[in-house]
Amino acid sequence: MKQERFIALHGREWDLLQSWLSALERQPKRTLRQEQALEFPQSYRRVCHHLALARGRGYSHEVTERLQRLVQQGHRVLYRPPAPRWHRVAGFLLAGFPRLVRAQWRCMALAAALFYLPALCLVALLQLRPELAHTLFSSAQLVQFEKMYDPANAHIGRSSGTDLQMFGYYVMNNVSIAFRTFASGLVFGVGAIYVLGANGVLIGGVAGHLTAIGYGGPFWRFVVGHSAFELSALVIAGGAGLQLGLTLLAPGRQRRGPALVAAGWVGAQLALGAFAMLLVAAFIEAYWSSIAVLPDALRFGVGALLWLLVLGWLWRGGRAGTHGT
Amino acid sequence: MLDTVREIETPEGVSLRLRAAGALPRAQAWMVDLLLRLVVLFVAMIPLALFGKGGNGLAMLLMFALLWAYSVVCEVWLDGQTLGKRALGLRVVKADGTPVTWLPSVVRNLLRVVDALPGVYGVGLASTLIDPHARRLGDIVAGTMVIHAQEPPAGQQVPALPALPLPQVLAADEQAALVEYAERAGQLTVQRQEELANLLTPLTGQRDTAAIRQLVAHANWLLGRA
Image: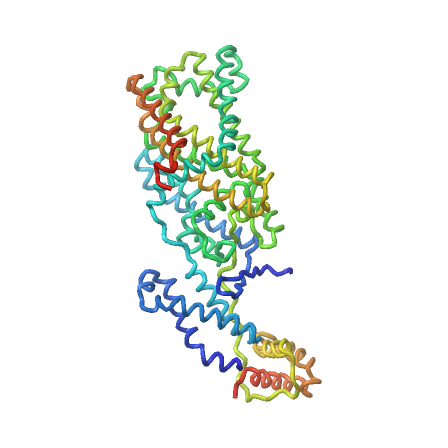
């Protein structure tokens, strides 16, 4: 068949499809309700056939390019992602995320060790030799920490600022750290190892120093509430980064490319879960932990309850039998 | 192949040709996005300043959203295009040419941290130069690529002339070359048209303007015009 005849036979269908696709870009909802939307998959597949014919018969650039543009546009519409379903977010947070954390338990355990070991060692060490705090931190930093947790403060854990201001600050700061920890894990895990270790040293150093100089009361009262969500989320983000770096180093029985893509999907879900945990942590930290007048029993009781909740959620969440399959 | 075109076979059995976008247009799109976000932030600061210190917190939340969420939300909702990419005619797609979804978009935008590492996107630049499809590390891990969304303008029509049968049978690729010459002739200077047409003097027996006319007439015949 000659090219002119081919165009004369099918040109009208191409024009119709083109105009429908253009209308779809301008007004998606209305166009999808039109009668023509039902025709689209068939029409698109016919045009795919025309493109294959045009290429096979060696029709001119003009025709193949036109069909290729049409097919590319149609491909994007036919294979567009499904609309987001919000109940899947709840399902992910309740079941999928804890399951994913357990599936990566080796990396999570490694991340936890990298963070908690230096922290606990420093807390213990600073009780025995308090002067070591001056090698860890500069004097200005020490003064700032002491000012934040001075037992004489009305608000604890901050030198100034309102609840809302601190909420914004915690979200920006903590989530950015978690995301960077995850992403920097791609560099053979080095970034994640560094961030986890450095945060372990920092947090352990502050806790040890404040306890040693007798400001331990306000400090522990402040951190007990949000520590469950915040520290677990940091460890999970670090574990996600380690997982990514280890996949790059040792992809196992897969080629490196596909293995990395799979690890990236897992890591992104872990990072999103950590993000949700850090939102909760920031909320607790800004609106609950900072209230100075609460009795200690309530404060530590709630803190213990939250730790139990987080650990129980990560340990049991999404098990078969409790949440279906 | 030196070309940046990536061929993807669709489930319908035809191949799509996606043109990978290099570092320069992507850097420009990034600059546009950066400026837009800075403008939004500064404009929002003015009413937020009225809230005092609480406004600071809201500004911080806004900054967080602009820094981490902006690209992901735009890419998923605006068909693979942040506003900067839309301005530059770029689009993020998955490796199989389908629109980008939430998780790949999250991966490629979180791993921006690594691509941006030494100073201004050093790792990303190196990666786009090495990778045959100009992907940065985030794109490789996410299984996505950035393509030129706007196709080059379609070629011109073959000018209509009375059809003239070819004096001898030509192979398929020779016929295609002849038709493409006739299609593109309008974009060339007359001198270049003549130069090309004169190569076919053994076929046409003509030179210069007459040769051009005769080749176009042959092309009309090949297309099946009367």
